[in-house]
Length: 279
Ligand code: FAD
Image 1 (spheres, rainbow, N blue to C red):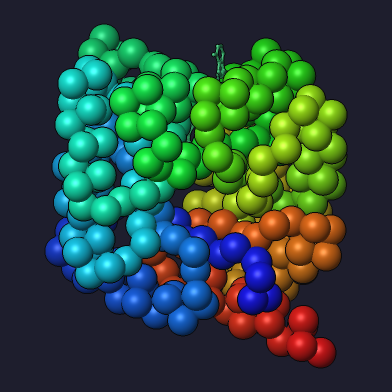
Image 2 (tube, rainbow, N blue to C red):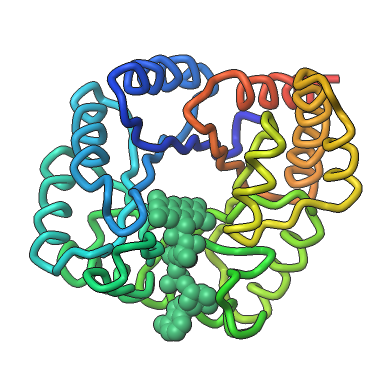
């Protein structure tokens, strides 16, 4: 797996204990030689300071870390200030997003499409940052049509994005078909599949309903039939390892893991994959 690009995503913890867990997870996942880690940005910019503080702190330790960024409820000046801070700290990659508006913030926040954020970053910082954008093999839940969503993804690349990370999915055909459609639309930048390990099925099902990721019916029924959480983890490991293997065999350029700030779910998949590839 040495030539493949591996990256790990975290979210900003709310407590000191959570922060320690994040640092510990980061350190342990370093063993898999990731190209970078990334840290999400709370919907509406709600974690602006926490995200920036953790990112600049990790940069001081020499870690390759990409902050996620959206306009949220902020104005251009605030976003420029953040970009400047990241540049000074030696950050060289950003995950640029439109984001969502959290409930209760509707009147202060206004959504800025990701292509506009990408153009804004390029306008003010030139080629300094490698810009990742989001892509949706099962199509963004608000998209008017399949073709529109691909067209808007293309717009993000035309605005200056470098590569894309996908929403997670459990059906590899959705990813491969999406890649074909992107290629037909003239997108030639790499699109890295996002991988969500399965640990707690009820949480995953709830989250998936909100973000439009589909859980195959057979998998839902199988998972819901388990009484022992260990059975869920065991089948989850098997399913997601097979998914990664299929993606890599089919030519995916790497894997981006949604770690949920835990070592084991992601590390077990990578170890199992490595064993399979050696066999
Ligand atoms: P966009 O690319 O702007 O697209 C949003 C919708 O609008 C789509 O339906 C698209 O078809 C349409 N559209 C796009 N451009 C235009 C346009 N110019 N005119 C009209 N319609 C348009 N959320 C967070 O809050 N914080 C995070 O840190 C975060 N990290 C993420 C990381 C990854 C890898 C992924 C896949 C998602 C992440 N999200 C995060 C979720 C993301 O913010 C939501 O899915 C959001 O609804 C869309 O963001 P986007 O950048 O894909 O938006």
